[in-house]
Image 1 (cartoon, rainbow, N blue to C red):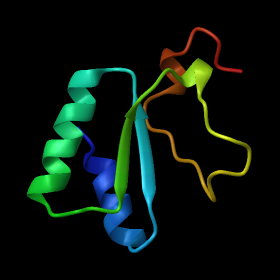
Image 2: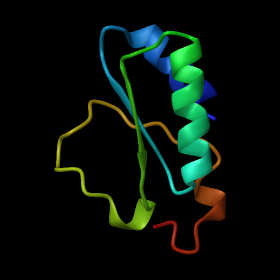
Image 3: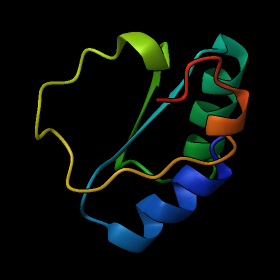
Length: 75
């Protein structure tokens, strides 16, 4: 529901945090939580980790939580 993402966004403001999830329901919850907490320096995107469309060097850092253990192809 975006709780970790929103904490990161608060910590690095005014920098921007981009979060992905394949579940539309989680993205919707995250947007709702961002609005409730008045955090605007976030982007929540529905995406598949195997087909990310971000260009090289888009991000300064990447954080994953509870992801790799669920991947069929973690490498």
